Image (cartoon, rainbow, N blue to C red; front, side):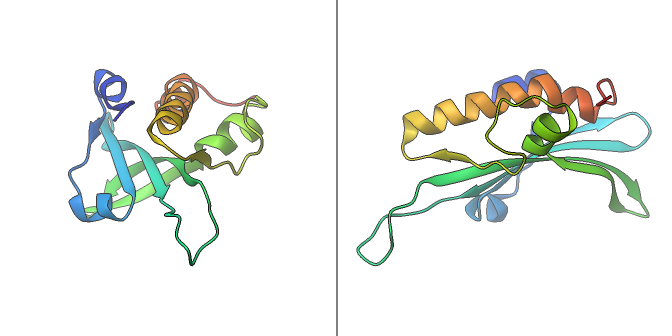
Length: 136
């Protein structure tokens, strides 16, 4: 992935979940102090053009989660979509809406969308997950 190296450099690892990958879910997680786990999750919807369906761009969105392990099960402490965090919480109007899906139609536009989302994850998402950056 375009963002994988940056995430790995920050201590996040791609969780090995081939069945979820086939369904369009990719999660990077990082253990944090206090039995906390930070997660960056990509949800991908792939559309194929055919004679039976209207053309549509594929798309993805990014979810951020912070959870604690309680009795062997993760308990979500905080969760937010990246677009909502940036647009609504931090008031940065860099995306069209707080419920934004990054569209793409080919490898080039996918790379651009991943780079844009990755920059926002590194600039806002990771510091928010670590508790280092909070909206005013």
